[in-house]
Image (cartoon, rainbow, N blue to C red):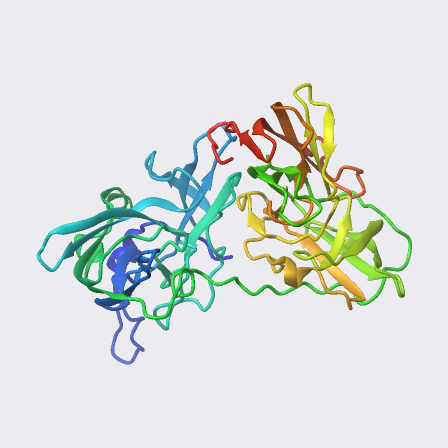
Length: 490
């Protein structure tokens, strides 16, 4: 893994050439002086689409570029009640904290850019700040830059992320546009946009004035044939490569050796909403409490499961594999089964008893249990990439490619260290039937590894609760979701 470096004087000013005498080969050429970070524009002329009933995605085509050393920032929160603390790392070691207030969540460097837009008459019509994800879309910008970047892809959107690693490889760029940003309202016309790096970041990274601002000519045109979400700004889903299972069932004596194991931890439920059943279905007269749930692996070892199909059946025997500190496989053990789930929204193989969802009353006794107890394991969310042995580039990040299809004879499902497996509230089984429940206080309980079928380093942190307050009337139920510490996401 490439180490991060700070604002080293040599990198900023360039090294002098080595001396030489007649008859000797000359020393190395002097390094080119480059700023630690530079704001650049792909083009000074930018055309944006104004989509009816939507607006304009303010993607101005600007990028930040790292100079002669990588830029690395790690962000953590000590608990859900604690603020996020961001620290620059140099050569793999903590160097200095970013000023308080710059980073408030895990979406990136807050208010990194300031954008001012004026119309053809010189009147200011828009002014806004933009955050920066150093792990954004990018590539190397010069031939001497490293061919690959060690840093993760993207910045986390999970509300209960606890630690993140953001980085920009030497000579690499990161597009500054936030794919999740709300559209702006700009009528068709000609504009001038000035994009500037915020003063706090200019001071921290020592970015000179000439490297911290760009001026762009912007044309906003009416979109002729596009509707919301069909054009450039919104990021397409990343193709995921499913890790391959062993060629055959393991043989020999089963064993669970001492040594590193995964540590499965749930985060509090989120994305919670009360909804009526779908019209025209058997659930039309019911009410449901929907939710999203995430179970993550705090490590220090990945959770690796292979499933091998029983001939002619929609069932596989599951085996958990164990690894030593050097990543060598040192044992395995049968740990249950995987079953085929052909429902819409799934259509893949699920490991049984990976998690359990329960709705508890105010006395924390179970009143409803979700029907969902089987899961396809994939690294869908980064939860804490600062833990020991976190894998910043997990292979299986998409359920549709990680968990096989109906013809599969075997599958490998992996939950890598630092990543979580999230099931969103719109999927089948991600709800409680609250039709006959009175209004009042309840708790959504998420339990990881409820039957202890999986072998872990710690099973004392396998339960997470989220308080909810039900209200309303039949088919118009409401839910209030109090914050967890400083995290207010419902």
